[in-house]
Length: 576
Image (cartoon, rainbow, N blue to C red; front, top):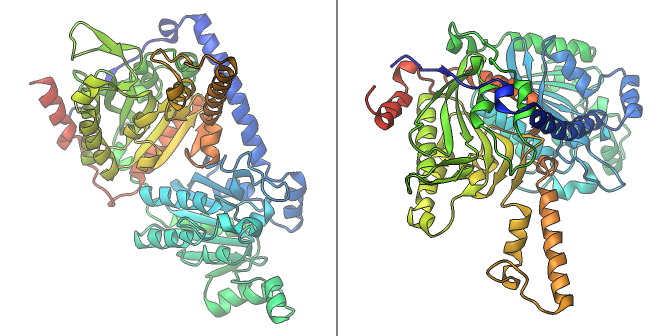
């Protein structure tokens, strides 16, 4: 039973797609990813060179410069929430790139950490609408993976003209401090570096951290000098009120004062070095990371941009997994779903992916039905596999390209509602780290069944091909205007003006839904965590898997000899 029967899967790109088809797929994706790269560059520029220069004139670094100096040389941070608020315009015709805060997974002294850094080039690091939610989302990721959390604080407090959208609600700014407390209660190390402004709520964010450093330019205050001058007519500076002289030597709210940004970042690295090292090497054993037999970059030639075109889902897995080796679990049932185990960076992970094209129909032997849809056996298979991964402590990736559940009289008679409820319960109560990846379409209840964002995956990624919605635009337009259509979905009205009005309305609905399915819309309103280039998907998945194995002792991680997965194989596939 200790043997995990990984076998090679996949074929060369030349066998999967002819040269012209692969080129068409690459060209279509390139247009979308050029837009992604341009948008990312715009966000990373903050409020532009003038504001960067203003930060430098103060002898300080920008948030992204601090992040670059903090991380291990030669490593790449994995930023999440890059496009929160992207495209939104606030009072004064102002924008808040990345909601004014950088949140990123980053390697520091060989350990994955969550870094939360106020962008001091955007309104001096103020909190905009969705900034608190973005910070809390990053804290939640850190809590779920038990990653050390590092706050690089340079925050002027709430963006006051929009305070009603970031102060009062259940996920308002104050919830950040509850998350600070929960991280502390669960033993997750928290480190804070205060580099400048740290006003009101910004003043509270570092306090619960295990170690707090301040530069000579930094101050932490409940109310800044300007407010005190207005309220009490006292002329005093914020440094006088809450600088390092006060908080390191008098109040005890900070631990160490340092001269500048560079020294503070070096001190934070030293603190992380004191923490336990990653458990990933232990769980990896002698299985070192190995590249797939087929390059991840070939995914661009396999995945069609047109969601109606099909592809071989196993070819996708073959370009993600170490050595393109995979153990498919329960292949005999629920053919529309592929479930199984492989390695990423030498570490075991579970995978769920929707099979595309035609699949066998066990309800009607000899017939076929469409893949990318959930039927009875597939739903039951997902629930059983998800439970087994949770029981065995195997991190689980859900790769979405799904149109939804089967519908109709037969589907209801088969009890898809009940089977779906079992899967919902499983994914709602799992404690193993689960990650969601929107490859292409993620539609209807299928998105929920595949552990989409409402089911609390630790991270949800979207490719540029992703389409997130209840249903496709044309289908939704028909549903919205159903009372004005006949059984063949044709407009019933005979009056030309009425017909034109209905037709125009349907086209408007369809166009709006198509716009809303844009992954940038989901990323802007935090319905997905990050949009990534398809060629980087394996790197992201490998890093997330390592993060899942870094912490030890907070969750069950079983060795392969006692996996429930082996029992599933014997029960479903028969004696071996």
